[in-house]
Length: 472
Image (cartoon, rainbow, N blue to C red; front, top):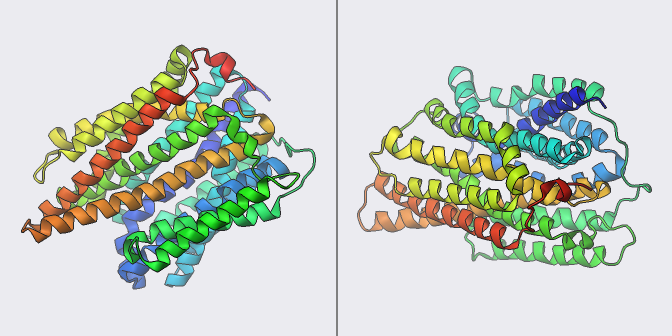
């Protein structure tokens, strides 16, 4: 495949991935409008988000493995089609159940696209320098898509209505589908024998879905409630059954030998911590600006632009040069330290804060940190994985990111709510109590990022010669 076509194909994959990433944040801006029009209660409204997270987390591993078995481009197109059709149904939804069901289907399609896109990229770009550059572009889309979603959501809700946060996916999905057919290589299955481990697929998918269900409902039901504990216990039992199956079948869904790959295992842990800290940035800083500083949705989106522009500069060129020069370990550790410092600055932001003094400095540090670190964490995870298992490895990494986000948000929301209640009980006004809760959550997110930096520095293989490390 010619070089120029490969880079065009990369843009197509990034557009498909961007739809998925944006969808995790764009819907949050529209939730108040959705609640008013469709008559959701506060608890039912959460399922507009949870239904998507549930199926997205549950089907990542299965989607990645099916890409390896049945052809990655084919699965990418199937996932993209599911996501696009479900987006249309979401945009036309006139009842609560219609919207929630369509969001669940969106999650399945999104999981397949996310799991397969990264392995397609790795198979298209085999030269170390080109792979680092391509991963930088993909990393920018993944890291910046969340804050782009906040800006786009504000624009669409302010100028049109909530339906358009879903309908905007339709023309993009159709265009990406058609371009993918002509420009993305059809590699076919990367396994000689097409055999799907059904027992493993059922147990791990059910386990992940139950885990996400327990996590996202932990705050509402109580972490010590029988339903929450029972759900999480069932998830653990199913996961143990999955591990047993994987050690006893000829063609396992997820060969456990994959985790002998040190960088993949360590990167998965880092991915959980990374995602928890990044969700702290995307969600809690948006809440701080909206509820404490009284910014409009559009102003919140614009406030993220400095960080996005910095991420763009690093991810679209500078990060690849840094990886070529220093490998993946030191840049990843440095990036996560900067993320941690940026979240600490937000933890110090007062009730009457200003953009220049209390928002911009944190955004700048977070932009630098995310731009430096995201490319290395993906490269470290995928670098030594054989091509016939790249879809599975991509699913493992994406699952780590997703579970980190879900678990991190649940922990952060619990801490923020507990701190806010404590401050309210001693007489603090509502805004000050909210801000105090956010401070606790920001500090916890900073601790996640610092732990990710320490893990990267101590345990990642020292890729001082990335050219050799990145070759299959």
